[in-house]
Image 1 (tube, rainbow, N blue to C red):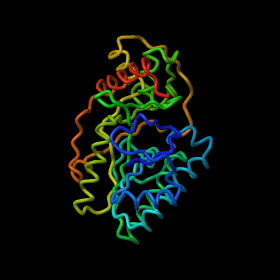
Image 2: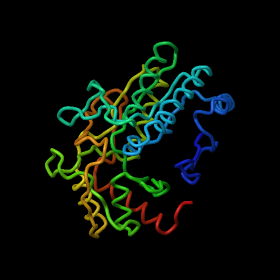
Image 3: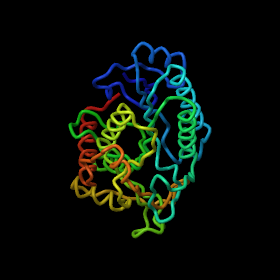
Image 4: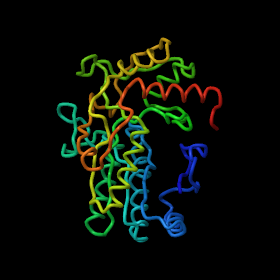
Length: 301
């Protein structure tokens, strides 16, 4: 069962489960859904996720990402939900020294998006100490790619994620791609990120579910591959896979962007038995490009 207010999502993306349109902060609705569907585990994905927007409109992020999560957790605790899987973010680390972050790296977010998610992690931690609820918090690094079967993909209007933006440019949906910051202390001056294919991330959630249902304790783990690519390297992959050049504009840095952020991701493999299958930049780009070509033929609403 999927609960979504469709503010950024699409009915077409819900393939194999009933869809209930509503907000996770609606406690009466959530209470009814949990009861009627005999739920034992909640996977909480709902959030605003655009870093520059969070800097410009922080209260929007605290209202949706933090306050709505608090309401959801209260409802789950009252209903006796024993297990909870939470979509967190590598943005909780801010700018770690040396670019790499493991789960013990101090959290020091540099934007309201990261702070809003970290506050939710704290609520989960404290709730786990006070109640029987157990949880896994998955700290996503940069999610990209689309379903390898071509069924669904990211269709967000005015998307900001680099791989999608570049693939939109490759199919003619955008006139250019912007590089925000070319003077970072990185090998080519552009930001470096750990890109993880969305299908491997989905598998991490299933592994977390299996872990909790087997009696696992509350844990927080990184979701990344453990290596990074610069903005220029990503754009080069798009050119290589698409077989077309891109018009690239160099812009100033965006507020809230760290120079580098790469996962130390041994723990998720050890704890959850996670084994990524799509750890390849060209594969991430290829699946995104295939989805953009499909959208160009048959746009979602």
